[in-house]
Image 1 (tube, rainbow, N blue to C red):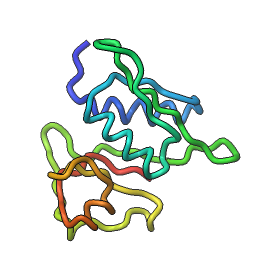
Image 2: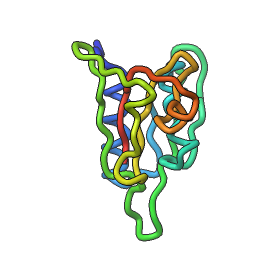
Image 3: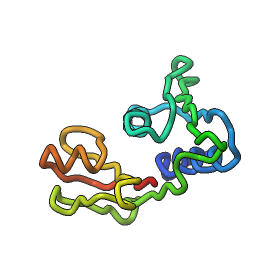
Image 4: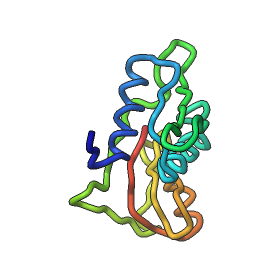
Length: 132
C-alpha cells in the first residue's frame, strides 16, 4: 500500500486510537516520527513512546494518556504543513495555543521541537502539526 503522507497517517492513527480509548497504538517506524513522538511525550500528550522490532518490522508503540475519568488528554490533532502547502513560522510568529493548553510542533534547524522551545531558542521552522 502506497502512503503519500506518513506523518498525517501517524496523527490519524493517534487521534483514532485516542477517541476509541485504546491503551496503545503502533505505527511504522521512521526517525522523524520517533522524534515527533518524543516531543509529544515530553509535553505530556502521551504516556510513553518506545521502539519495538527490528529492520522492516520496526514500529513505534505509543502508550496513550487519559484523564481520571477516561477522557483523552488531547482533543484535536491537526496536520498543518502538507505536501502541496508548507507553512513556516519565524520565532516571532509562535504564540501560545489554546491559552497554553495546546502546542505546535515544528521542524527547525535544531531538530523537531515544540513551538515554545523553538520560540525560546529563537528559531523558526516548518509547522508540522498542532495539538490541544
